[in-house]
Image 1 (tube, helix red, strand yellow):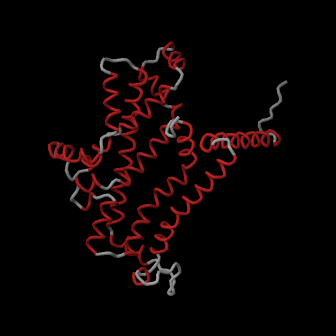
Image 2 (cartoon, helix red, strand yellow; image 1 turned 90 degrees about the horizontal axis):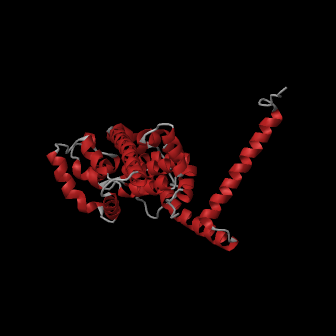
Image 3 (cartoon, helix red, strand yellow; image 1 turned 180 degrees about the vertical axis):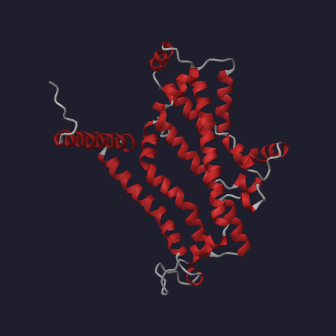
Length: 310
């Protein structure tokens, strides 16, 4: 007679120990991929990372500190980390009472989310097409895609703006979103990843009667979650921080994204350091939370899925 041990405390503890051991081994392998196996190299790398982390954290901490000061305290000389009059939330209250920042944040969430979903969908389909299908002109088209990686985006500003004018998409959400969907580097990343997927898996799916679309959606995409997550995060961050194109294609304050909107507040009210820092912290908070929630996936994807040079 079979013995049911699913609910046994010993089985639970064994499963927990096994899971912890597997995670520790996975972390060790990831560190070896990133830092190598030499102890000296590991120590030097950690020291370098500490220096870089401190150099990155100091400006961020100073921006946070300034956002909780009054304007007089922010411009006082000498500069102080802890002002004599204490900290205040007045800058954040002013930012949200003005009403523009919540609207700009909603626009940025809409634009960045749309760009992320559509870019991942388009680039994954294009990458799968390059990696797994045969068609006339495939080599030339893939070479052109790779060549586009070297083209600075600023060169395409005027043609894209003229195209948006022709499509009557200036000062619209589609005018902000559509030009940002072109991401040749993401097509290349998906292509290289899909080329590493064992062909036998797809052959087995086709034996069962699956076509290209069913194989892509039901077989390839589920096992591509690490690269999809990494690409989605990087695209979202880029779209969230994008300033140049939304600045050029929008004039209506109700359609502005956060980077564009914050620049107009600065120009309209002069240099208001404390309120500017408070606005910047509000704009940066979603990205900080995003990285804190998905830092494990980001590091794993960079180390093991091709974004780190494999």
